[in-house]
Length: 144
Image 1 (cartoon, rainbow, N blue to C red):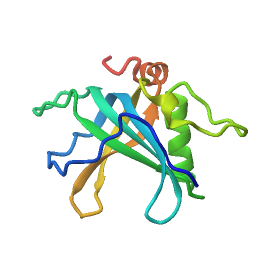
Image 2 (cartoon, rainbow, N blue to C red; image 1 turned 120 degrees about the vertical axis):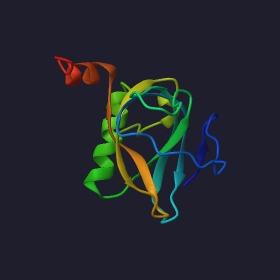
Image 3 (cartoon, rainbow, N blue to C red; image 1 turned 180 degrees about the horizontal axis):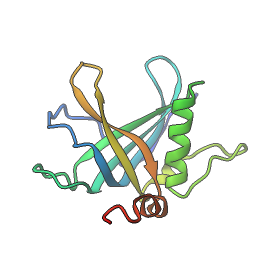
C-alpha cells in the first residue's frame, strides 16, 4: 500500500499537558494522512486544532491533538470514522474511498470523554463527532 502524506500533519513533540476537560469542542482539521498502523491496518490520521471549548482554567484555543481512525472490522472504529466524515460534510463512496485531504480546513464539533492512554495516564478522547447543524440541534434548549 502506498503512503499518502498530506501537508500539515506534524509529529508530537512529547509535550505533556493537562488532559482536556470532558465536554464539547469545536475543531478545525489542519492535517491528515493515510498510513499503516503498527498492527498493519490501514489507518487515517487527522490533526485538529481547537477553535473553542468548554470553560476551564487552562488555555485550550489553538491547542492541537491527533485523532486516529484505524480501519478494522470493529463497529466502533467504522462508526467513529463515519461520524467524523459526515461531520465534515463529506462521504465515503464505495468507488472512490476516502481522501483525508478533503477534510482539511473543515470545522467539526467533538464530544470529549475521559479514557486511559496507552501509558496508563488519564487521556481525553474524542468519542463522537458532530457537524455544526447536528451540534446545534443536539444542544437546542440545553440552557433552558
